[in-house]
Image 1: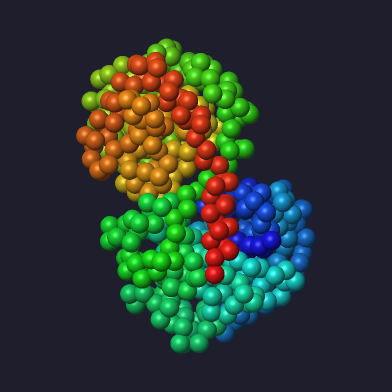
Image 2 (image 1 turned 120 degrees about the vertical axis):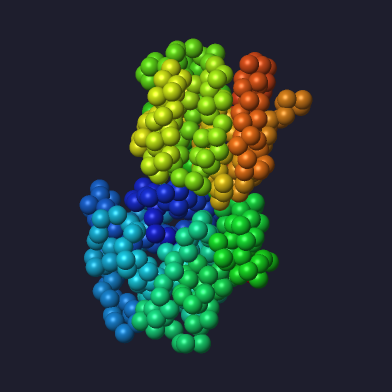
Length: 469
């Protein structure tokens, strides 16, 4: 049985700022179900200290962590739950703060975290066969572990969740924060600075990212964010494994947030739709197609494409419901849509998990025309709730959404290839045509019901990688 240690900066249910937390919360359980032994190590943030979980943690050890010429206090706490052992790195100076990121010393904070993990591995009784690190915050950890090998025969694995965020630190930090010979400097340096993601890619035994298409995309200049040449050099060691969905959590059969729970019945799903229409003051009619958007209102999510075509699309007898927040210009745009189409559009600026689930369950179609999307969670939730996604063919969207084909009635959604507003409009008009063909909607619903995006298949792929020398 392989013993895997995950290192990450966030994890549900303890702490979350984005999709990384969902992966670190779900993937270890998927691996455990497939026979692996899994532990996870995280920072002990202020929010966790003040949570219900803190009282069930036990102290494991206390030691000093070298950070350059300094020795920083480190306490390790342990929590057992859901078949996983969770370790927490306690240092109040670095982590007893509001929020997770955004501090001027973030580089130092997470280099300390990485150093503390290595010191922990030297001291812990458990033997780890695989050390699996995630995103830039643990990039230094996988690099240092690959150099020092604290456990005999231990394999190092690094996963890129979003290559945009790389962990740039001043060049002088190598001598100030790292306890490594200068011979290793080149593995960390990139364009005159230290780059934690580059260091991880350079040193890890195996590199993964969160979809096959994204793995190919990030080796190109458009998607590679300056690291494409480093990734191209490691091409043989780079693997794309699609993220799964926590199908226990996202389950329309048991989801208490829904008006009505359902499994595969489109008739019951429509009761959710009419209930939402009633609540939002829209015309209550299950025969009016409802298009949903749940997203951050940022350029990556393709909002500018929506801006170009939505006025034209709303000339049809359709409804649009939006939930999200982000850049002011996009928030103002959606406010203007409500002003111009008060009987067709409802917009909620902000985020509510309960309302998001209602929206997923009530919509007929889910709009997600991203410029890039490493994996994407929204389209997976939409399919799980029998809401056909309309996506651009990029990253995980391309790998998970199969375009509906009316001739053989295959596919679980709609897609378009180029980042082009008219291609989005054509896909949406095609979805509108399919909506008014009952047999096609029934086939589409059946295909979504049959789709399996649980963690089981992805966990098997990870275990195969772990076993490869």
